[in-house]
Every structure is written in C-alpha cells, then in structure tokens.
Image 1 (cartoon, helix red, strand yellow):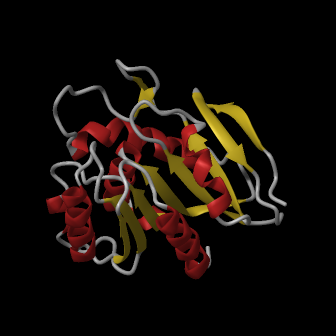
Image 2 (tube, helix red, strand yellow; image 1 turned 60 degrees about the horizontal axis):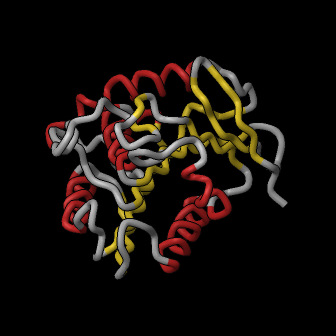
Image 3 (cartoon, one colour; image 1 turned 180 degrees about the vertical axis):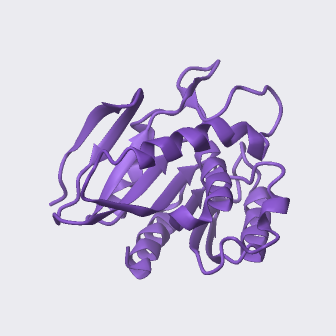
Length: 218
C-alpha cells in the first residue's frame, strides 16, 4: 500500500508530498498543476505513478484572477512565452538544490504537468535537460519561443508522454500535436495518447500514463 501524503512548507513553497514505499535512494517526480490549481490538483494522478518515488506537488507561485494559482503572472487572452516561466524555473531549481530530502536521487527529476503545468514542464526540460529524466505533458501546450531551444536536440533519448483530448475546449488538440513534433525534433522519444474527451485525461490515457512510467523503469 502506498504511503499517505502530507502538506508541508519548504522555502515558502506549499507542497503536497508522498514518500516512497521502498526506503533508501529514491527518485523524485514533480507534479505541476494547471492554471487555477493548487498543491492538491495533481493528486488524481498519484496512484498511476511509481510507488518507489517521492511525489512532490508544489503550489504555483502566482494567484490567478479566478482563484487558485498559476506558474506565471496572468496574461489575459495571450498564450505564455517561455520567458514567462523563468521565475518558476529558477524557483524549482532552488527547491531541488536545497537537498531537503537527503535520500532523494535529485540528479534527475521526472516532470508530470497538466495544462499550464505541462507548458512549464516543457520549458523546464528544454532549458535544464541535464536534470530531467522523464517528461509527461497532459492536456498541455508549448509556450511560445521554445523553437530555438530545440535546435541542438537537448532532449535526446528522453522518454516523453503526451496526452490530449480531441474535444479540449481550452487547449486545442493541434497544440498537443505540435508539441509532439517539436519535442521529437529536440530528440525526445514521444509516446502520444489522443482520445475523444475534453480538457482532461481519458481512461485510456490514464492507463497509458501508468504503462509509460512502468516501462520507463523509474
């Protein structure tokens, strides 16, 4: 049985986390919620992720006009650019460098992001590929300006899972298809799951996420 999660505060971050079942050196998975989410929003995915890893779900750094939190300052009616995520990327690196969990193998971190959190995951991985093991982008999109970051294949060999709904009313499915192509051009090995749902994961893509992590042997 998987251990219970807790809410903790680290360096001004409010984080929901779960310890791994197996003690000793463990891997780390960051769960990055979407716009208006919080530290609890990503926990619906927790049971689909490996039990031998720390799960950390931090609360976004910025309050949104609709409540909840996000990963960059609000930009009404505009898609974010990669530079908009730089403060969040720097803060995440500071969190990872803090060595709070001494038993964590944080030389490589896996990222699971939903919607805006997926955009942050892509931006983080493209700018910090040496720190990233696995990427999963769920109902997400690429921030603007990432094309230049992909040119030298920084994600060569990185396992990546992308899932999207064809009826997504918030993030058009074309943005997920574009993400597949760009991340593959950056060298990533992409598994793509598309299904006839809205801004959420289908049951089939939930299973795909679980199988993806199982086959990645985190």
